[in-house]
Image (tube, rainbow, N blue to C red; front, side):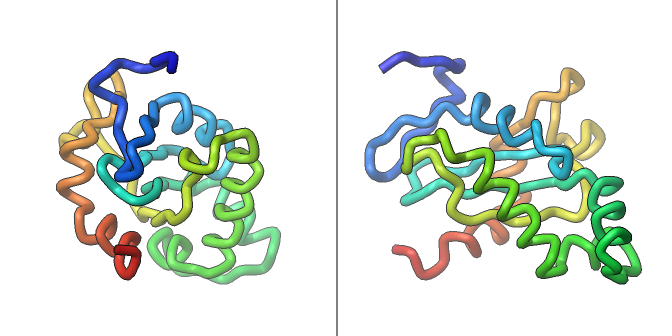
Amino acid sequence: MIITDRKKHLFKTSQGKYVAPTPIENMFLASKYIDQFVLIGDRRMFITALIVPDFEALKEFADANRIAYKDEKELTDMKQIYELLDKELAVFQKKLAAFEKVRKFTILDKPFSIESGEITPSLKVKRKVIEERYRDLIEGMYKGTD
């Protein structure tokens, strides 16, 4: 095994597989529809993600596809947007090992920020803060899988 990330940023799934989240997150950030991306999976059955979409790209997609919406919150709750991001993830994770693939995700309606303490001034994600703040959403992705 070659460790390609800082050791403290490795996490171990409940099956004992080690995952370096940063390279995987960076891969998904290549999507024009994704602005911020955080993998979740430490001591869990499978990998999930919290996604902050690129709202401008989503609005362009919605307008081009005649999808009506009032605001960003409504846009992130739409089935068509979930399906769009699901297709994006499928394309990007073709090369990943099965245990590294994102099985479920949640779309957030506002970005992580320095002011909220979710990212550092150098724009690194504070995983503990995010996992704590979005605990209910994260647990919801794992419900019924134990």
